[in-house]
Length: 155
Image (cartoon, rainbow, N blue to C red; front, side, top):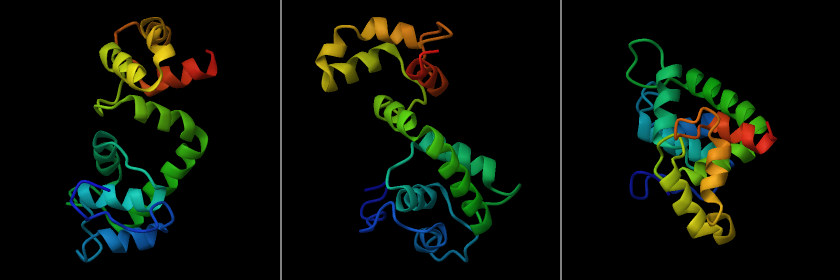
């Protein structure tokens, strides 16, 4: 399961400690060069599910030291801690949003939302347009994770 064939195949996805995941997926690159693909696999090892590449790119940019080629162990541990805290608070909504965002755009659009509803919940598909416009708080045709969370919270 991952971006490189067989690269991420670990039997205990979601059960690895950050240090073990880092050592396993940093490709032995002296623990200083965890690139995007390494990060993707390590995050699967720690959390048990695949993060979108767009999200991983932003995490890598945010946590990599200035001028560094990759992510060092301390930065990876901080990133994992931050994500654990966020996912603990928002895990269910985040996973639902990620499942609805099949194209990995980082937002939902009406055609994509309707297609997912049609594939997964036909009764909701009949009301997909109405549901989408209720979720789209800014009325710009894109539902963000914040919009989605507000909708679920009834705000």
